[in-house]
Length: 183
Length: 419
Image 1 (spheres, rainbow over the protein chains, first blue to last red):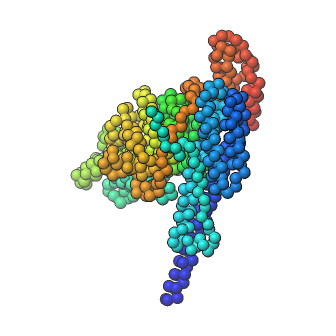
Image 2 (cartoon, rainbow over the protein chains, first blue to last red):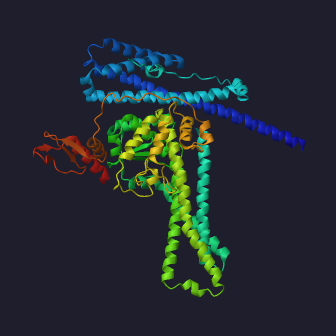
Image 3 (cartoon, rainbow over the protein chains, first blue to last red):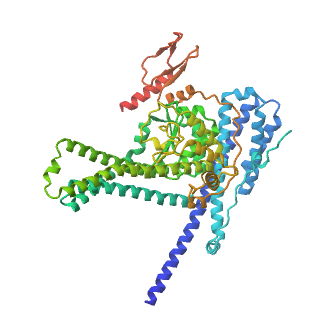
């Protein structure tokens, strides 16, 4: 009788540990999967920019600095590797692009260009997709990190080398700035 | 999110079980009426027959329900190139909601703005919008509507409401058949009553009980179904606010959609609960036991009441301030909710010229029509099986060659058909 109880407790313990480990693996894969979604959108954005610059250049002769800023931010973003480096570089690129979108307002001819219109829709949707996939990624990271920190999963995580993931933050000027009231 | 789906699932299963019980009771009562001398057998066979009808209808809806619904609404599937913006918005919402696959996108040729979603599984869901919706809404508003539909898919409403709808349908059909049968057999001279010799009183009680059940069962089933449907609309609104982080988008879209409903709009009753705004409701102000949707004005007020955030919790707060009673979101959903703040509206930087006519062109292109613009400005639509090499403009009588690539496409289509 006593032996049966001991065996039963052991079996339950083993099943419980396996479940915990598999839960951690599942969460880590979800984080990886969410990251690859962001990566797809970032690549799309990088591919879109040369096209956009090429189309707009002919119309916007006096905005050399804006274009240089975008091109520079883009090449930095492409070179960035770690999540935190990418966060920084992509923030800059987002800032440069939103400044560009503001400047476009002054060029009605450009806004009438059919090609530019579809590029701008592409840019808007890519920005949105970066934003939404970032939200989704950060949700997954939060879940994963909370699980790793909390007891008793933290013991398992330490034993099998699960480490916390970085959040991906992009600060866009629109979200950072408090709306200014001008009198 | 997963916990929320689990809790929704339990509630929906409960609803379907309740509906199935109503159906079984109805079947049993009818069986009892038909076989009053052997009540056990009668009830047993009545229940079994009702369950068989139910299962057959469920199987049909699982096998091809989406296709039947989309076809009955007159929806055409479109590709990315046909309407890039619509596709982009659907993809954005797919990402925001974490759906496993991109839903298919359909357009319905109708000037009345509306939209619905179908799909028993999130992996093979579909979203349909009318041409009127595309022409009237801004990008932010369209995003709100799509988010609401994707909300239905990710909350599994499209699955459970279809199954519940099928069960309600089975109850209505069986009750209807029974009452009709009763009516005609009484016309034929009440053969059954004359054949029973023992206890005319017991017979009458059985008749009354089964009659009452046959009348009440469909009403009860519909009340249960519509109450759940209304709650699901609020939940999908809350999900839309959470996905877009911009409640105002959906609020102003709902305003435009409900203003755009016309009275002569005829759509099947079965589809009514699936649209974003019920196309059958006349004014949309009163809410009764038989409303599929909450009043649109109320939904707009709740959305506009979300002043400090876009989470499910914020929606619940706004709902409670307006209604002073229990909320709609449910504790498990609230636990999964997280505040992300409200984003800035996307200023429509470039005023897209979206006339209804342009969007109809999309539809024609999707159906395989070729478009040829005449010098006089008239757009000619060339049907997919056009055989002549030249075409004459009906307004200015100029004659044009049908574009070569279009003829080639037609020939290719012909060949593939012949194969």
